[in-house]
Image 1: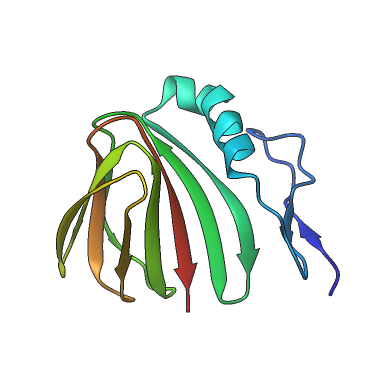
Image 2 (image 1 turned 90 degrees about the vertical axis):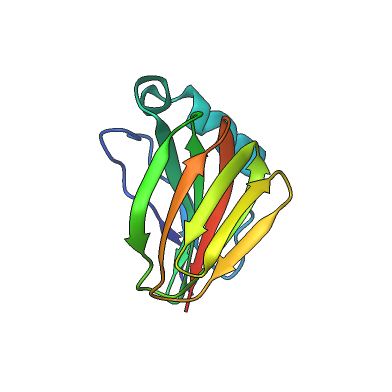
Length: 130
């Protein structure tokens, strides 16, 4: 398998980040620093970066300012896993609600509506697989 990299964008012109390879090492602390240093974080209520993407799985690191809301939506691509790395969020879904703080994980089956509210400044890892 040939490694796949991200393409440069207007917001991230450096490009060159490996998204898929036989093995991908992901430094979540480094990516969190990058997210919090970007203009989007300073001018918006959130910022996110895809750290891994292959057929059947995607991992996205998401940072939210306090009171930021990811409005209700569905993950049609597969089962999701939300793992809080910093802060505290409220995860609301058709299947129930949970307040999740650092070290907590919630999973949700494909196609269920859900939303996220940052109860404090937070960073979480979203994994979508299926």
